[in-house]
Amino acid sequence: MPLLTCSSASTFADVSVISSNGFKGIYHKNLQGFSGDNYVLMPGNSGNITLAIRATQEFSSSNYLSQANITSNEVFIHETKSPEEKFTHLGLMVSYEPKILISKLNSSVTTTLVIYASPDAPLGTYWLFLPPGGCGGGPLILFTVGNQQY
Image 1 (tube, rainbow, N blue to C red):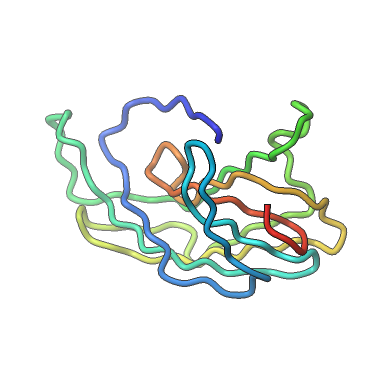
Image 2 (cartoon, helix red, strand yellow):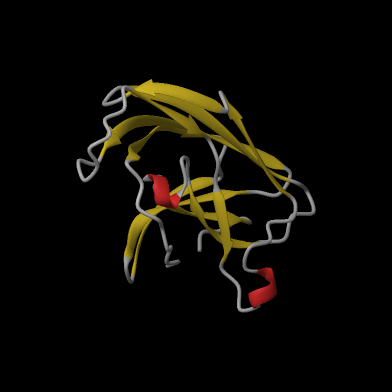
């Protein structure tokens, strides 16, 4: 499981998956330090994940915000033995609808991400931090390109 070094931020998010479709399968995995889902996608296909994102505020700051601007982004970390390939994800494309969300604190907004694996995408498994990213409270999932789970 990947470790992140995050700077302290006054705003973060609680994120939950509402629905998903288009995947060959979604399998729950219990690995050392990780309990979550492995989304399996065949090359040449796309899968959708719809998320509910609730902006929250840590109370370590005296600055209280009335709303949060959330930019949808993701972080792929390739489960590979080669350090050079760790952050590459050739043949994988992600799009969002909508890309930028504005939420009042403690209110939820939704976004749908579409992950496309090109027909020549390398088979393999990635750690994937969903929006708004690992440091922003986005959940960690396993994402596998291929015909079987990790």
